[in-house]
Image (cartoon, rainbow, N blue to C red; front, top):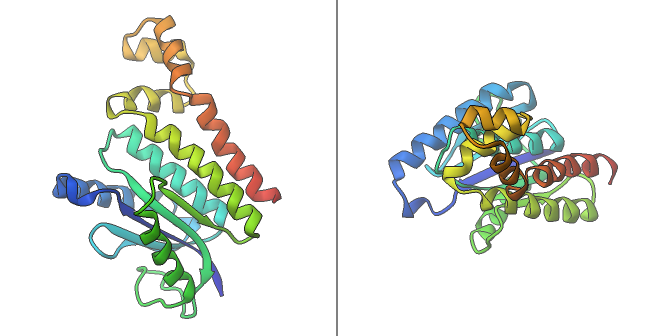
Length: 210
């Protein structure tokens, strides 16, 4: 049968404090497995130290899970960056509900091949959906745009971005961060918060209609 397979690894894991990155990686995986338990068929499992894999209920849940993962990183000002493959592919063996091991199928092989290909790219997201080639291409392009917003935010901007992503009025954010209201409004615009949110919404909408 075919299932949504999610694989990810740490970008440039050998160039940074590896103990810090692995601790952040485990923290993210634990958060997602708990938060999204009802949408996960086989839990995200760290397989090679700096990679994880898991099986998700459907592609929409897979996208939402990745959005949540990225916003968790921002909310907690983590230094880690992840590279993702979301592949709707064949798993021939029974789904392991306890840990993402001991499963075989072309879908898992394809996901790993695509993850390796991404390492030669500046893009952090690859999508092979359950719909058709057009769906995969459009969603992949939108994820490229989505990633461009996230990657434009610096670590010292994460606190402000996180405040905005909680749908707080810029005047509330200004008060919380002790900033001038006008400056906060300009930062809201320059950080492209509206565009980021719109891109997320488009991914989910187009997934349903394409």
